[in-house]
Length: 87
Image (cartoon, rainbow, N blue to C red):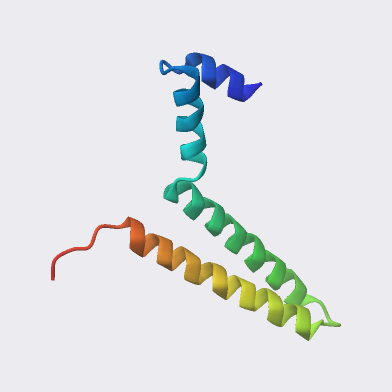
């Protein structure tokens, strides 16, 4: 329903309007937000699991590895979206 409302408010023809909406879903800024949210969720999960007495070390190691991979993706995406400054 929300998409229909947005489509109707778009001044472009239907196909162009839908393409514009879909391109916003995959924009670098949106990807960056989603990656940061996933990183924060993993961070909270790791903190909660780390506080429990009987720890699953393998699970914690896998979650920390995934969190590190997300941090690397975030850094790569930030470097690609920010303009390079002259030295």
